Image 1 (spheres, each protein chain N blue to C red):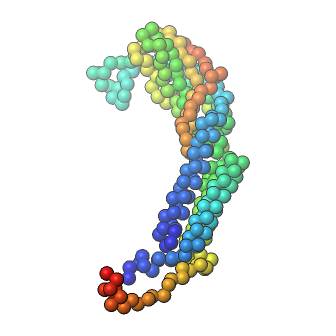
Image 2 (cartoon, rainbow over the protein chains, first blue to last red):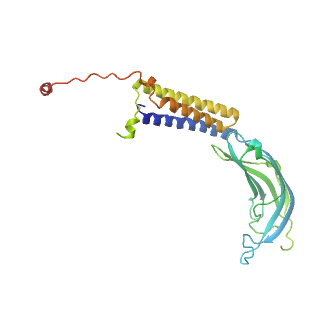
Image 3 (tube, chains in turn cyan, purple):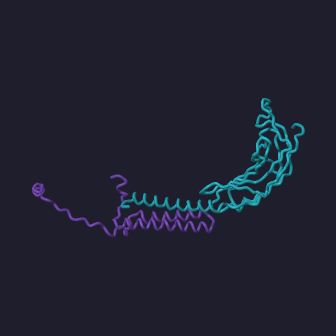
Length: 182
Length: 91
């Protein structure tokens, strides 16, 4: 510590150690306590099945056509409990889950949103269309039962990503049989 | 002389001990206070800000060679000139 450079170096290194100790404690607290759960609800209003080609080139006759699930649903979610001092953002998704004869675990994200502050953490949306294509691996929907639910991933300022889902919000719906072309 | 020579800012041995103690105490206290305040206010930003202020104060207090760090200067023994003959005889 006898000259300026050594004092600067020693002070800076101790400061970094102290700061990262604090941040480590913060991360550990968030890891132990978690972020709790949020009350979420999804209500399916309308389901249609259409036949089309995936991608921008719907006129590309070389591609196989597949059946798309077209949804309209309401989302009611209060995600404010997920916001504490170590929440940077919350990534909310609406996930369709279903089981087919050949694949027992299918998850399709049909809608998502990034929430960065507590004030906009209350979601009440009506008649939302699915943002992302709802296609099955078999490219067919034949009286398939699926569940819609809200899932979330909490991105902390420091520490580990944590996720959760609103288990009470699961809503079952049945895809109608495809009738006629577009 | 290079710029580094102007910025030597030397302090004595007791001053070094004092400066190290002061810097570690201020940084530790600001870390603890920042953590507690941030936890109560539920704001990690407040924690970082308080620690940043503490760090700035630490730099201000310990970096410049304040007179308090130079109260025990090293007393050097005055230069003694040996005679050339003595050195030759001793060898």
